[in-house]
Length: 428
Ligand SMILES: *Cc1c(COP(=O)(O)O)cnc(C)c1O
Image 1 (cartoon, rainbow, N blue to C red):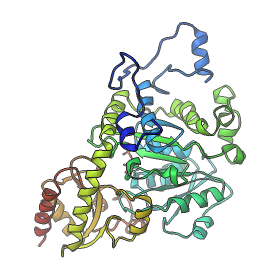
Image 2 (tube, rainbow, N blue to C red; image 1 turned 30 degrees about the horizontal axis):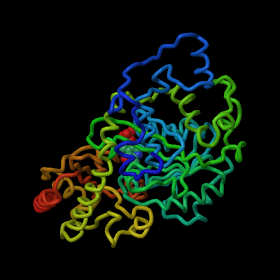
Image 3 (cartoon, helix red, strand yellow; image 1 turned 90 degrees about the horizontal axis):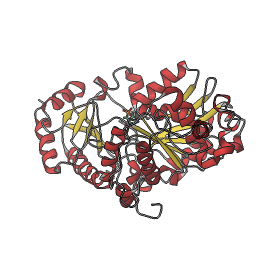
Image 4 (cartoon, helix red, strand yellow; image 1 turned 135 degrees about the vertical axis):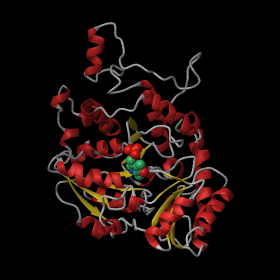
């Protein structure tokens, strides 16, 4: 599939049936797999042979779908997880442990911020949050001798800032650590961070990849270009024998292309078990088959909606990097030339109360803690997803109290605009 265009990979990547085999990917709904001898099974446990033995570690359906996403991102190996949260947790915890430090953009999904700043902090991992707009010098100043990774979101949910991936990659690599990029919003159809220097890409497949609000899921893709052995003292988990796994040294045995995902599977999936169900992986693959068609329509609708909102006198500001006036337009032209995403955010004049009136009067746009669905949905973060944050924390990550996040579905743009117009008119 490597030489095909992204549209073809969406449809046919990850699985090529042999003669007489099912055209659609089979759902291997089995927790376990049978072997003729104990020796056969032993070789699998020693990671000496490839094969399946227990679905908590690996399942063929999941692997077919992970392979498709791997091909879409241009990576060397990939794995599915039960959620985007699990993907980001594993992606960082696979290389950072108690006593380590990570530099992360402060413009990230609220759930990821909480995971890092609260839960992983309790596990002894320290995070320094930096502005995605900071200079290379400012970003460098956040690094410590025990820093193990850098993290950012290509297009941040919900602030819609655009990450300068090359800048972040340069700083991360100058300090001998990989750059992890959450690429949920643009999807590989609109941006492939590995091509710009990112080392590891994560996804909440719950969003555009599934696209129909059917299943929660996540994915981690390794670009296979980070030389762990070059910084062996920083990454003992990859570069010294794993006593919990028969003394294997992942970076030696599986090389740059395979070490990271093999360790995350053999160690983290084994111990934490955040596996995606094969049934959900099948649904995710159905979504992926039309990802390129849907993403294009999401972006067209968002552009039309953003242009309408920008001219409306009850709207105080609009964030959408497709707009020429947007602060991130230049970065979007570089990293997202074919479109960004279907999510637009904007401020309603009159603040929190006006935003609530507007939301209540929407008919097509449904109030949901969700984005990136075929059906248009909408959220007021300050009273929902971000309600645990103080006003100062909200402002620091660009989520103001009057901000509405509007996720354009793939309905007709004229209907969406008419719905927005009548809801804005309802504000007195
Ligand atoms: C939703 C989201 C997540 C979390 O994913 P879940 O599948 O809900 O666990 C992580 N990152 C981004 C950018 C998201 O939008």
